[in-house]
Image 1 (spheres, rainbow, N blue to C red):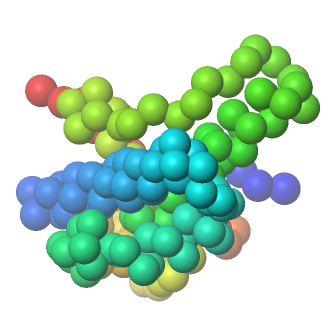
Image 2: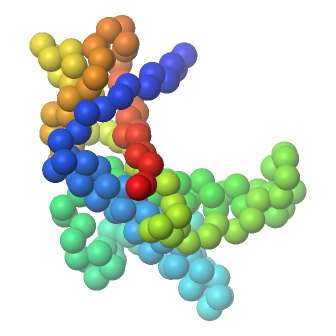
Length: 170
């Protein structure tokens, strides 16, 4: 059984910028892959929109689409691609009547101004730091201080996914 735990982070200004950059990277990957899928659908070309297909396309085109990609963790891009693959699957199931609930529309591009800045870590070296109960380790960002004892909140469980919180915009 999984249990979600929210922990308040206390990032430095540099870490705050890096968190925003990672969230922007997820949004860019989502939008670039969505543009690719729309182009394929409009031209009538066969186009896979599974997470695997979108990852393959992104890896082949990321140098031209986002030349700054090495500055962020690959997990940020994966979060955007995973989100798009889930949205496209939901839209497909909904349009075929195989999904319960209200109809789901085709995914829309995410705006820099309106989208909630978020991304997630699902693989890699992230999580608790031995001997430092008030900190977490995030790839590319490093040690980030927390306002509370994280190891006590997690209580010996394994951290399998981390989603840094979004901050309200001023």
